[in-house]
Length: 289
Image (cartoon, rainbow, N blue to C red; front, side, top):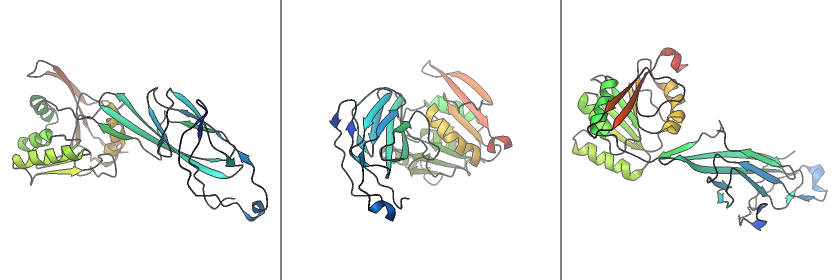
């Protein structure tokens, strides 16, 4: 029995047999009274970690590690046999040139037991975090998106990652009664606020600085505008399915929502001569369940 969990930092890289230089914390497990009289046996635990791609950056207990490759192996320092420990693993990678994903997983183990951590799969207890490099949607394509979603005077438009705020500004100018943007980048949030103020729409449009995926309420939205990447959309999808009312529309430039088939997809040629793909979904009762 254990009344506390010990977190042991500091381990040796089995691949290089050098110390990783992690700092040990003075947190110890409390054995039961029967164990107190016994001499603790020192053991090591082997760690095997699988990450999403070769160049992913791996941290153990928030400390950087050096090995690369999809499978990485380490070895802990001396541990007390049978004592309960916990490691937290964090991996960051770029599936494409505009998306950075971070995935975390915590594992409890007993000293001497092998540790296997598969970071190629999402941990439902610790959802992925996504950071998207902002790329502007051309103004004429924004207009096509608003037409596709039939944005009008009764709509409340939300946009995760509004960047410079151009899509929200266009939506309100089109007739939407309210716009809300949630921007992770503080500089972009300020840029969007300045653009909204310059357009004299600061009463109609609110820019929130923060994570669009974390504890956000989208239930007020009747329209959600997206240009965030497939990975981000997949993380946002369950939130939208749960919170949006039937009849709400989701309009995306280029990217999809996993296997949720769009109600309509169109291709338009922009003023720049490039072809753009736009999708729209209308939330139905069954999509909320």
